[in-house]
Image 1 (cartoon, rainbow, N blue to C red):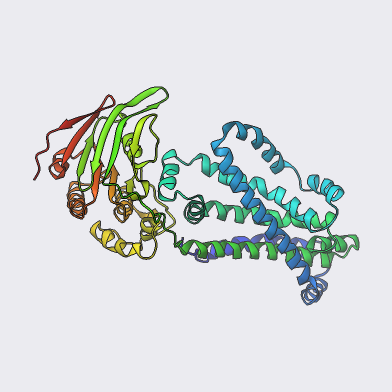
Image 2 (tube, rainbow, N blue to C red):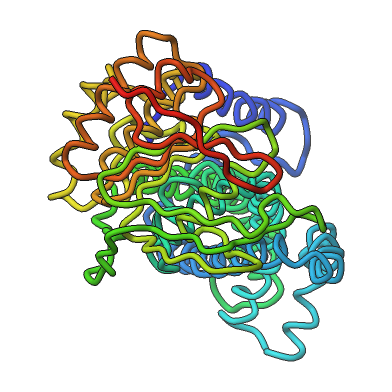
Length: 460
């Protein structure tokens, strides 16, 4: 993700409310309003007082509470998206938290916990939690099942998957949470400090209010706004920088099975009591190129995922080695905010990335291009490049030629033949380009009614 440039119109948009309030306060006749000179003197005096200790205390409380809400909200959204009964039970409670005013939670917390840091932090976390949860829960519910399978395949270890998703999938949600939730958390902290703390900006505002010192009250209010917006901007900047440092994370375990073949023995699989595969057997030997064809919905992708260990058979067994399998999913799974190079190489370590630029050049892709700017055909080539740079011995490609023209298909076929000559096994699914693909293959099967039927291969 690239750093956003300063937008002059956005800056003006931020200034307009301040200017409006300034005009109302100092040019609308009201005996309680301080004159402009008195306000400036008071503001100058406060700036050089001990106010910054209170600003720091408030900011620290908000930061801790926001991180607590962020972690809890992400965990809740991931948990509830896969547990519908639990979602029906807990989601109304979170919505109630979102709708309730801060004061509703401060009084009970003061009575049970007492005045101090814990009361403020818990009050702010309760306010920020629903914002984080709703943002991430919406994103998780929109996540397609194949994208979940993608993450399980390319990052099977939970810790590595969490790190990668944080940097690749969740940055837009985090930015929205910071933009909306952090200023809201600051506001909640000030209210909580007003009633439940001995120090902080909220306590200063309460003191100025009780002493009817409007010049001091306005000064503290301006400091509150500047602090909340500044810290939110710094946090967004931090996450932009964080996103550009791709993880040094290698999903390939040190120990592999080093299988000479992938083998499916009498496997069966069904969806909603409909059997798509029934006692099917298949062997993929190293160095072979197998083409699989069949009508839509007959189970071609299911068979590929069973061979890769992404799905488990409901009958029979599959002898597979997932770390040694490069898998191209049927849909284009990209990260729009990141470059082509990062989309292809995110799961590789620095040594394994040496091959990436060569593959990108072969597929006529620029590694510096932002993925959001790519056409459908270019996105498909990015996903294919991701599979090709994988160090695995087995290459399973599900519909690699979607949205590609004949010339590019021919180019990719010759590239795949080079991979085969290096000893890689290729299992390719396609319902198009049979005349172009078949001559490159060693075996050609058609999947029909849960069974494989061989076809004659005329090699070139």
